[in-house]
Length: 297
Image 1 (spheres, rainbow, N blue to C red):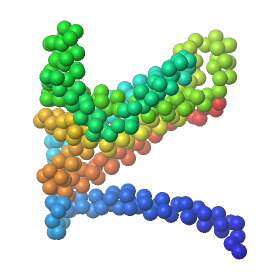
Image 2: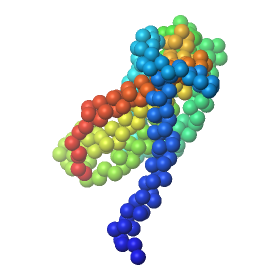
Image 3: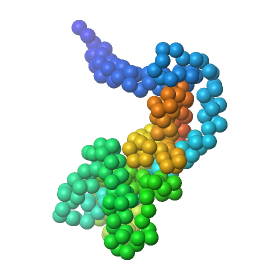
Image 4: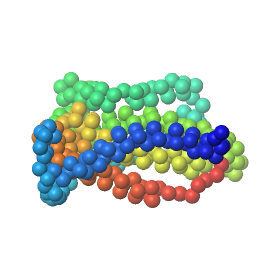
């Protein structure tokens, strides 16, 4: 007969081993494979590859486009974190504390973009930004601001900022729900005590709501940063393809171009290693900067 202590370890192994196997196949193996291929010159399709050592890394540090892609990625990170968190927090507070009757309907409306594919969102906003038929230029013309119309995705100045709005629109719903869950778990007695002490609604938000949902805010910020650094290339590929004149290339889209369009798979793998390194450094730095003492209810 198996002892209870051994049964516990068997149960834990039964739960963890399949997960670790899947994690190894779909995460660890691709990650170490990318590191391995970064030391080779390889087209990605041929059976032979040439070992070049650190040449791909030297090439990357001398590539004039790489600093631009890093800047573009962190520009999207900063604008998405600020835009999504402000909008999601505003909507979450409004739908939980203002007693809006249509709150369930608005939750569905704001969450709807999250169930759409990023590719569909990119195509939709490409039409919205169309210089001739798009809603943006048509709306500006309708209110007499013809001088503000422009080929948004065809401008080296405006193409990158134009990617921010669809990215924020697509991300608000998920974090709205996460923050709403945190706000809903705050005991009403906290607000009642603050009101008795004479706190205004703004003071209640700043000194009660915000500190008590800080764990949800921190998770949201980290998730936005990670998904942007590793996934923003999708909307770039759909809407601009990195153009015009490399003005919207992010690290991921430049990796895709090098590996799958120009068949420099080894160099693409090197860029992938850089993305991983920068993501880890950024997340660790944010973990340090966002740390706060735990607030008890």
